[in-house]
Length: 62
Image (cartoon, rainbow, N blue to C red; front, top):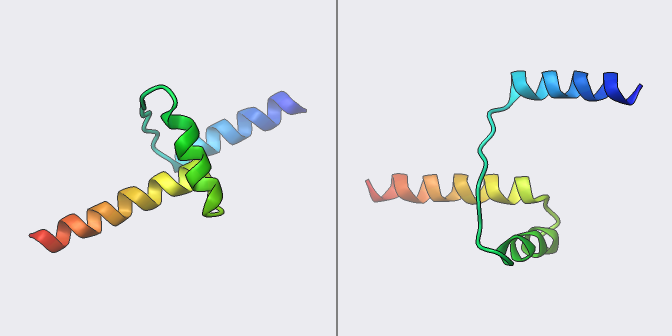
């Protein structure tokens, strides 16, 4: 069951999302996780929010 469920999730994720891999300096991952957790967010949600906020700020500069 686990393998089929995982395969279905992988297929859905591949169809629905693009992936971006990021690298941070050693120790920074824990800081990002702690900050996201303190805001009640997942790391993914925090990173998406940070990206979207920066895009909006950049648009205002133009």
